[in-house]
Image 1 (cartoon, helix red, strand yellow):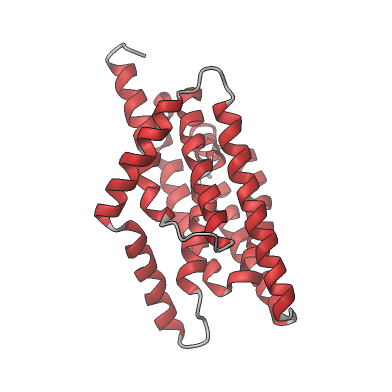
Image 2 (image 1 turned 180 degrees about the vertical axis):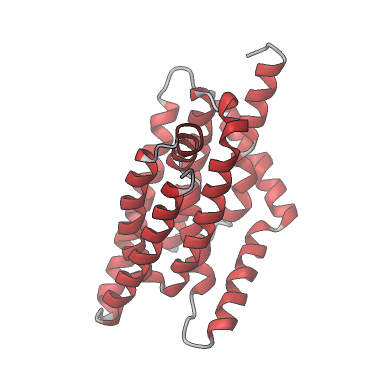
Length: 237
């Protein structure tokens, strides 16, 4: 089934969250703090390594990611994407009642971590085009482990990102037959560079070094494929 990999990935996020919440109950405040710092540093490293793996390719386009982030950030700010995501998290919190203070932060942070990486795109394309799920199975293991750490630091809001993974990756998998022919190695690389920088900014937020509205940069992920596909169609690539 086309959606098997996405369903497994979503279940891994939910399962990891439950395990993390169990661990969280027995953690002292100082242990939670160091866990949060370890998570932030890890996310920073993932963002840096993801970005550099693309930028160090001699065929990468440095100007493209700069334009994408600036233009995408402006669009996201105008559309208030981060604000809308936080409001969605607040509504989830209201439905759950008191005692779940970081639902919005946990939901937004986890959703961005799980959905902006190149593995999401590659895995969804593999599922949709080949009905194989090796990449998403590997991503499920990584996301499950990350969910344990996120939930132990940020709380139950992480579990709602499982639904975001299900909807987003599922949609990509179902659309794979249409977008597959255009998803060249170049496009995936440029999306990965932008996604890596966004993951890096999430790490900055977790470490509370500076508040960056990372959600507002989501439109930046669309600019590289739109531009590169335009070049393909016009024969200028």
